[in-house]
Image (tube, rainbow, N blue to C red; front, side):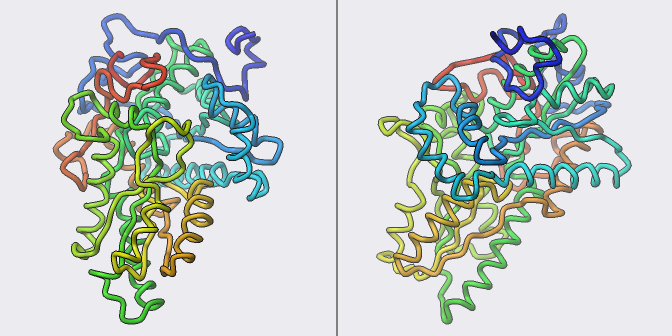
Length: 413
């Protein structure tokens, strides 16, 4: 039995089935959108009276019994056998079967709600996960039950790709159809915030502090020759990377996903005032089939090259992550730092934004710019690529595996 065939009361705490369609108001180009976004402008520059915020997260297990059901949700439709999932499950079991991501999202939700209240905006924040309870569908129903009809979504991912943006937009379409609320709710989404000062300034602060600390750890360190910054992000399949962002063909190899990361990393280095410090973008947390090409180099492979290049120290900067969730704690804090130790490198991992006050304020800024219809020319951004689009463009971030599925907050397809 499909989820949408279940009685309404029994649909909660389940991942909805994929939507077969999306609600499209007469004359609209963007499904289930508010009037300002409905005709598909790149930037919505008219005020919009949202009455609630949706905070969207990846989700994670909160106990050993949750691990495999969570991983089944993550890989649903891909036919991944349990024996392959067990390799990933071992990482969660190393931490008692509990991912820290849910507690981090709870803290972020509380901090954002407090910041919105401090600004006099008074918007409640409803939280929904992609792969574990509370699911995005639960958050949509909760918002509707509370009398909210015009929602602004924030995904806890800063960059453009299928898994970090469009898939969340698909989740919104799934949730809206499953709840049967297409004619009653309007849902927009804030722009990807990879170069917003609220996202990058906490990272810059963390790297600045780590540079000072590594100089104490390694006396006489020449940071222009003996220190390297490795900006770490989640690897994705090359085919998905090539499709990230609008299909303009001008992003270069790796699509908008790689272009945004490179621009953000360069902005961090420039604002540190250490332009001469060597740095590169590296990848982690690959999960695909061995025969499918993914973005490289892996962080551990990049570390292995550093001693021969004369490096004595390295900073691991988790640029692609907003909080210290499991892939940061395992892939960097356990595996990558162990690799660095084996290579004789002094190594530190810098903080993620988490609930840094500047990050929380930055998310509130993104909400406020849509409430007030801020002109794009006035929106803060630290790279030449920004400010990114409010309304995802036609064909944005297609999945190489499943093609285009119904999605909200963007032009069709």
